[in-house]
Length: 314
Ligand code: SAM
Image 1 (cartoon, helix red, strand yellow):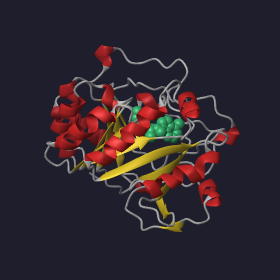
Image 2 (cartoon, protein in one colour):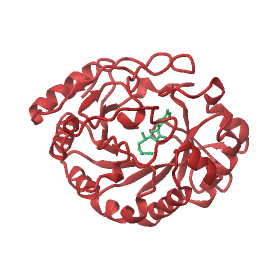
Image 3 (tube, rainbow, N blue to C red):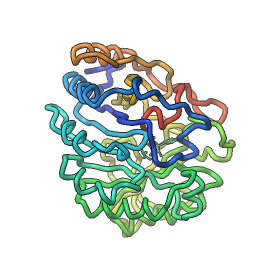
Image 4 (tube, rainbow, N blue to C red):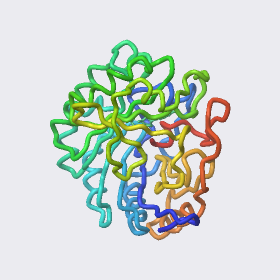
């Protein structure tokens, strides 16, 4: 289906849980209140939502959270979602720490691509940014994903001035070691606790790595580059410095059943308790309510999302 600005909406990000086994400082707000169990979509409602989205022309589905892999039924949920007619591409975003036991079953269940968050290569800094996570587990998860034969493995690094800008060469250097893309993502102002210096534009990556050469675009939101001898590419995702609203093809559905026409707007439409026809109606409404752009964002212009990312789904 097409929105009022002519954008074709083909991509759903579906949050399947608000729970996470990490608490990344830029993602989980201080004192975040999670939804009560009865407010969360049931497994059947999640799958009905996928069917409703597919009926309206969504072809790409990304399972996210919270941390999707903390769900005990994640493999079978992915298998059923992948089998929904019209869903051509099933992807998953994870912090990777639970992938060692799950990468192969997820691949077999029909997950084609995985994005794994990795903000630092330093175990102490990893513990600090994730509020207690173990770097070795994330690393083991990345290796498990590479072994499992996904069509694409991407590493997502939130670029944070004063935290990991000194690691840009080492992080980008992972693309020499692994056939994976590493994408630097500008920090979005979703939670408090970050000073102005934390909001670095992606151009800092180009300044730190003059040896990058442009790589062919792949239709995604990242601008792509490659290091000499890089097996994977280095991507720059600039929601702040160079927003990509004009090409936005996404809707988000939160674990508590709220459709968000735009990540950074407070507008939400509930699909809880509806059958497929009812959900289709709400998806239509959400597509028609997509704004042209997300408005100014930055250190002085916080997101108007009304929730932190762990309760939206990135
Ligand atoms: N738990 C999974 C993970 O860690 O990837 C999936 C959920 S997480 C909300 C999805 C993505 O959102 C991650 O890549 C994370 O880095 C990104 N994210 C969360 N908060 C962000 C922020 N303030 N700015 C930019 N990206 C953010």
